Image 1 (cartoon, rainbow, N blue to C red):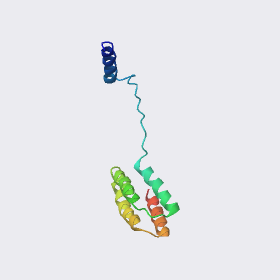
Image 2: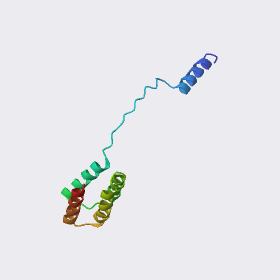
Image 3: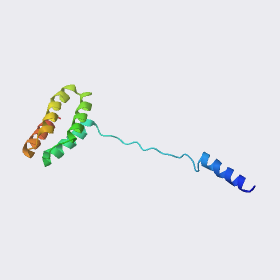
Image 4: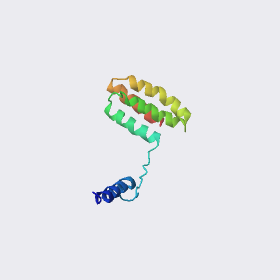
Length: 104
């Protein structure tokens, strides 16, 4: 029984201290600017013409980020995002997305 005490104590110390070093590396990911993300999403809408659905909220977030750099551009884009969120007709979705792309 006496020989188990050092083993148990050793295991407890290893458990508390952990095994191995702390050689954690972090990777930084560059997030594209909001205007590029919006362009990409609008190009997709312009080519497919699918209803936006909840993706409209993401488009609005992009426009909000653009507003910090170009308030006038964001002011003209924001109502168009609202319109896109209501459209169901693929032709109208494509047309509105193309109009928005021209503003960018």
